[in-house]
Amino acid sequence: MSAPAPSPDLARARGRADGIPAALVGLVAVTAGCLWALGAVHRPDLAGQAPAWFWGTIVALWLAAWWVTDRLAKAVPPTPGARRVLDLMVPLLFGAFLIFLWEIVTVGAGVPMVLMPPPSAIGARLAQSLPTLAEDFGQTVLRAVIPGWALGSGLGIAIALLCDRVPFLRRGLMPIGNFVSALPMIGIAPIMVMWFGFDWQSKVAVVVVMTFFPALVNTVAGLSASGALERDLMRSYAADWATTLLKLRLPSAMPFVFNALKINSTLALIGAIVAEFFGTPILGMGFRISTEVGRMSLDMVWAEIAVAAVTGSVFYGLLALAERRVTFWHPSYRRR
Image 1 (tube, rainbow, N blue to C red):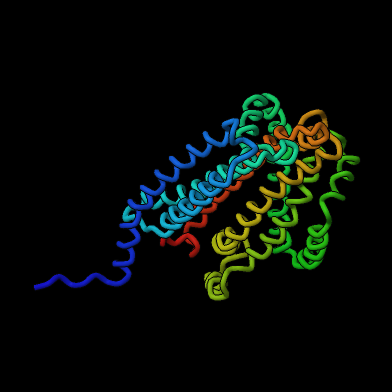
Image 2: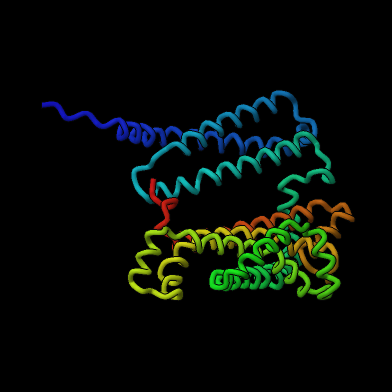
């Protein structure tokens, strides 16, 4: 008696899992080709004057990398651990190949350092300037971004709860929130510097203004996200406003609250850096960027940008991880 034929979904899943070994072999080949290209492009006979055959090789590597990344993205590993590894591998490979192309194009085509320094020069400058970058990180992130983000987001959430309790505040503050959100940051920053001085206090004030209203608007919207049936059930249990808020409405609002916190993590970093353009002590990411641009030291500018990008990504990732832990029940987190 013959075994039953597998279902179409199972057959497709097995087919996508069977394609992983071929993709990994292709990944090894692409990696070897990229390492060869990185060594070749820095040779004196190729740097700044790479011939056509070299660029043809780079195009072939790009097509092969595209194929490998596409196969890995479509693959369905059989175990949860392998899925997590693959979910991390695909974006890392994509980003690494973009940096590889950046290095190849800037060195092979002889792009001037003033226009676009290669990643190798940026990495070397970053390693040489770690003490300066650490001081700038402390001034901008630890003294302005994190306190301003926490204060602005916390006040926005607290005022949203008050607006939910007092309806006329909601009708009065929401239009103001939309108005302030449309104000250009480039106009707010110099005013805050004049009001609060040139040190970190003015940067915190800018971050608070930028993060307060997104937290307010999103939290107010989230508090209205619970369904009518759930609210009727709470009323049938004679639950008061506080009990309904804690047991139903606030948990339902958590996806909106975390959305505001993630948006504010980006706004806070941008706001603090831009605010430092208008006045700061001789420290800070914004101060360093504006100063080094004037000196035409673009490798230091890109080193500061790299630190800011990594900081923003880590900040956003930690909030996304916390969101997954708190809102695990949300449909968006269902497993594939």
